[in-house]
Amino acid sequence: MALFPFCKMPTGPIRVTRIQLVLYCFLLSLIIYFLHGRQGTVGVESPHPIFHALGLDRGRVMTDMTIVKAAAAPQTPLETPWGAPLVWGDSRNSAWRRAKFAQREIRTGLLTLVVGTYAKYIRRFLSSAETHFLPGQMVTYYILTDNLRSLDPPIELGPDRQLKVVPVAELPGWDRLALRRMALLADAIKSPISSEVEYIFCADIDQEFVAPVGEEILGHLVATLHPELYGMPRNAFPYEVEEVSSACVQEDEGDYYYTSELYGGLVSEMYRLARACSLLILQDQASGVMARGLEESYLNRYLINHRPTCVLSPEYSWWDSALAADVPVQRLVSLGRQCEAEDKQKRDKHKC
Image 1 (cartoon, rainbow, N blue to C red):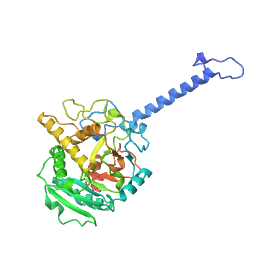
Image 2: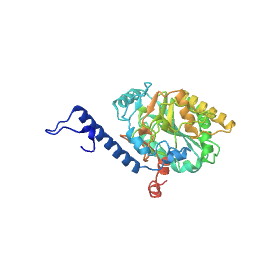
Image 3: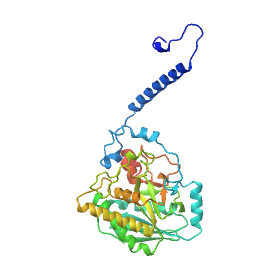
Image 4: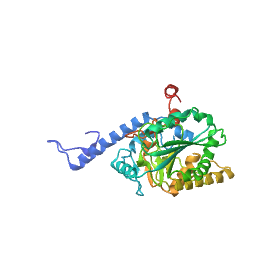
C-alpha cells in the first residue's frame, strides 16, 4: 500500500472501507481497459477492400473495422424502426408470411443483366434459382443480354418456370454498365414485364442461391441489407457525401445501408424505383458527376426517401469476407464480391 499513501490503513486487523473498495475496483477497471486497448492495437488491419472500391479511406476514422464490427454486433431484430418486417428465413414470422402467400397463385419475375464476361455465371445462377428461388411458385426469368449465345444450349426449366430474353446493346466497361442498368431495368419493367408478373426482383448475375428463398421475401418494396455494413455504426456507411451529387445523403439521414445485389417488390413500385434512380443518374452525368458507389448510391438515396416495406437480412446477400455479418443461414451468395475478397488460391477453388 506504500504506492498509494491516500489508501493507508491503520495498523491492526485489516479493514476495507467502502471508499477503498471503490478505489480498488476503479484501479482494476483501468488496468483491464488499458490491457484490452493494447490487444486491439496489435490486431489492427489495413482498411477493408470495400472502402478502397468506394474510394473511401476509413483507416483514420476506424483503425480496425473488425473490432468495431464485433463491438457493434447486432441481435436479430424482426422489425425495422419504422415497423417493416426484417426478414430472417427461419423465423416464425417468415413461416407465417410463407403460409400467407402460399394460399394464392403468384407470378414473380427474376430479372438479371448478362453482358460481356458475366455470361459465365448464367448457368450457375439459373440452376441454383431453379432449386431455391420461390420453390413451388410460378417464376419467369428475364435475361437482359447483349449475347444470345450465352443461353446456348437452352437451359431446362421446371414446371411453372419460363425464361424470356430481352436483347440489349453491348455495354463495355463495368462503370458504364452500372450507370445504364437502372434505365435498362425501367424500360424492361415497363414492357413487357409489367403485364406478365405481379412481383419483380432484380439480382446480379454473379450470384448463387444456396438455400431456400421463399415467399417471405415478397412485399411492396423490398431491399436487402449489405452484409459487410449490417451492424456497423451509421458513420461507416459509404453513402454519397458530395452535395453536388443527386445521390448525396446528409449526416442526419439513413437507417441502413442496402446492397444492390438483390431488391424487388411489386412491378409498379419497382418501375418507380428504377425510373427515379435512372433520372438521378442522368442528372449527375449531365453535370459531370459520378456517385462513389455508382448505382448502389442512388438506390440507397431512393430507399431513404421511400422506406422499404420489407427488409431482407444479410442471409439474402452474403459473401465470405472479414466484415460479413454472421448469419444463421446463407441463402444467396455473391460469387463476384466473394472472389474480390479472396486470395488467388481461393479464387481458383471457386472458379472466379
